[in-house]
Image 1 (cartoon, rainbow, N blue to C red):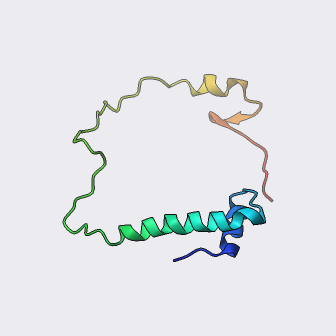
Image 2: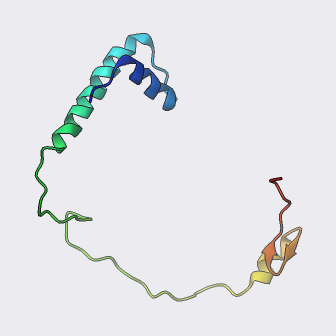
Length: 95
């Protein structure tokens, strides 16, 4: 896959980056080089390689799923202009 000048301008517009006409050719070359590196990854044989989440083997630390705070919903909605059954009431915004 290669990138042409129109694609560079479109990418610049989507990314909200001002690209002058003088810079289009340079960005075109850079993007094509990046895509060339990505295409090289398709040539790597990864059969039998298990996915990993880290380069060092480790397990995630876990904590007990215990409630440590809460149980005072009435105090939370006390300053709300309108509340009902401990829920905030807001005006309808979509017709």
